[in-house]
Length: 98
Image (tube, rainbow, N blue to C red; front, side, top):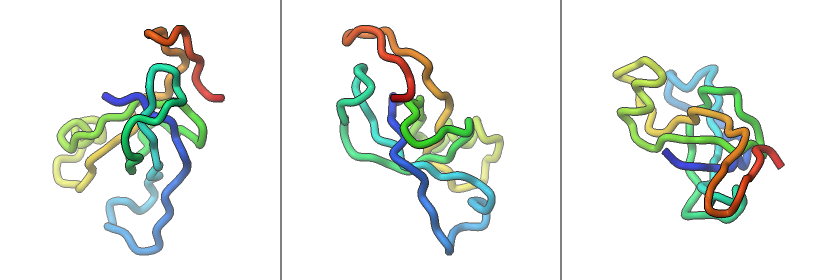
Protein backbone atom coordinates (compact mmCIF):
# COMPACT_ATOMS: atom_id res chain seq x y z
CA UNK A 1 0.00 0.00 0.00
CA UNK A 2 1.14 3.51 -0.79
CA UNK A 3 0.55 6.78 1.05
CA UNK A 4 -0.59 9.34 -1.55
CA UNK A 5 -1.98 12.84 -1.96
CA UNK A 6 -4.91 13.27 -4.39
CA UNK A 7 -3.97 15.79 -7.09
CA UNK A 8 -7.35 15.78 -8.86
CA UNK A 9 -9.71 13.82 -11.11
CA UNK A 10 -8.96 12.28 -14.48
CA UNK A 11 -11.68 12.90 -17.06
CA UNK A 12 -12.07 11.06 -20.38
CA UNK A 13 -14.77 11.14 -23.03
CA UNK A 14 -13.69 7.81 -24.55
CA UNK A 15 -13.02 5.02 -22.07
CA UNK A 16 -13.46 1.32 -21.39
CA UNK A 17 -17.15 0.69 -20.51
CA UNK A 18 -16.33 -0.48 -16.95
CA UNK A 19 -15.13 3.04 -16.11
CA UNK A 20 -18.57 4.56 -16.85
CA UNK A 21 -19.86 6.08 -13.61
CA UNK A 22 -16.55 5.52 -11.81
CA UNK A 23 -14.24 8.24 -10.48
CA UNK A 24 -10.58 7.99 -11.44
CA UNK A 25 -8.14 10.05 -9.38
CA UNK A 26 -4.63 11.28 -10.07
CA UNK A 27 -2.61 10.43 -6.94
CA UNK A 28 0.96 11.33 -5.98
CA UNK A 29 2.92 9.03 -3.66
CA UNK A 30 4.23 11.03 -0.68
CA UNK A 31 6.49 10.53 2.34
CA UNK A 32 5.38 10.24 5.96
CA UNK A 33 5.20 14.04 6.14
CA UNK A 34 2.26 13.89 3.73
CA UNK A 35 3.84 16.39 1.31
CA UNK A 36 7.21 15.22 -0.03
CA UNK A 37 6.66 13.58 -3.45
CA UNK A 38 8.04 10.06 -3.85
CA UNK A 39 8.07 8.89 -7.45
CA UNK A 40 5.61 9.49 -10.26
CA UNK A 41 1.89 10.14 -9.93
CA UNK A 42 -0.54 7.51 -11.19
CA UNK A 43 -4.24 6.92 -11.81
CA UNK A 44 -6.35 5.01 -9.28
CA UNK A 45 -10.03 4.14 -9.13
CA UNK A 46 -11.74 5.85 -6.19
CA UNK A 47 -13.44 3.36 -3.86
CA UNK A 48 -13.89 5.78 -0.91
CA UNK A 49 -15.11 9.12 -2.34
CA UNK A 50 -11.79 10.91 -1.82
CA UNK A 51 -11.28 14.43 -3.10
CA UNK A 52 -8.53 16.74 -4.25
CA UNK A 53 -5.98 17.36 -1.48
CA UNK A 54 -6.94 14.30 0.57
CA UNK A 55 -4.23 12.08 2.00
CA UNK A 56 -5.13 8.53 0.96
CA UNK A 57 -3.92 4.95 1.04
CA UNK A 58 -3.72 3.34 -2.40
CA UNK A 59 -2.93 -0.13 -3.70
CA UNK A 60 -1.10 -0.29 -7.00
CA UNK A 61 -1.52 -3.93 -7.92
CA UNK A 62 -4.23 -5.36 -10.15
CA UNK A 63 -5.15 -8.36 -8.02
CA UNK A 64 -5.70 -6.20 -4.92
CA UNK A 65 -7.81 -3.73 -6.92
CA UNK A 66 -9.99 -6.50 -8.34
CA UNK A 67 -10.49 -8.08 -4.89
CA UNK A 68 -11.52 -4.75 -3.32
CA UNK A 69 -13.84 -3.87 -6.21
CA UNK A 70 -15.24 -7.41 -6.44
CA UNK A 71 -14.71 -8.01 -10.16
CA UNK A 72 -12.19 -10.49 -11.54
CA UNK A 73 -12.47 -9.44 -15.17
CA UNK A 74 -12.29 -5.63 -15.17
CA UNK A 75 -9.01 -3.90 -16.11
CA UNK A 76 -8.42 -2.10 -12.81
CA UNK A 77 -4.79 -1.77 -11.77
CA UNK A 78 -4.84 0.69 -8.86
CA UNK A 79 -7.46 1.64 -6.29
CA UNK A 80 -7.78 4.19 -3.46
CA UNK A 81 -8.59 2.14 -0.35
CA UNK A 82 -8.86 4.70 2.46
CA UNK A 83 -8.80 8.37 3.36
CA UNK A 84 -6.07 8.88 5.97
CA UNK A 85 -6.97 10.90 9.06
CA UNK A 86 -3.54 10.89 10.64
CA UNK A 87 -0.06 9.40 10.15
CA UNK A 88 2.16 8.79 13.15
CA UNK A 89 5.56 8.04 11.67
CA UNK A 90 9.20 9.14 11.49
CA UNK A 91 8.25 12.74 10.64
CA UNK A 92 5.87 13.00 13.60
CA UNK A 93 2.09 13.15 13.50
CA UNK A 94 0.63 14.34 10.20
CA UNK A 95 -3.09 15.10 9.78
CA UNK A 96 -5.04 14.31 6.62
CA UNK A 97 -6.27 17.07 4.27
CA UNK A 98 -4.28 20.25 4.17
